[in-house]
Length: 102
Image (cartoon, rainbow, N blue to C red; front, side):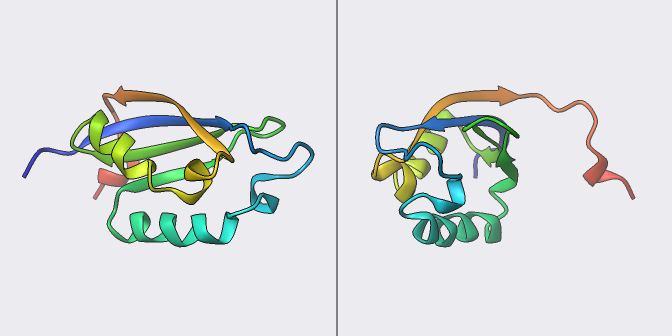
């Protein structure tokens, strides 16, 4: 099994994004939440949420490599339907992590 790496993902509005609506109000939101819930259960999504006052979403995600990230999110209903676009995938080397404290 490949060692997990941590990635910062940035999602921007896609061509089908409806201006004036929050991400929760976009088409395919319910289908997206089902997709994301499965990733949370597997421990892949660490934390996620929108940037306040912007239509961008940031996610911290664990995967073996960038290819796994991109393949995984190609199945996200919001991306498949053009609501969001995965614009940035950056590997992140975490130096300090509160979650690992005893």
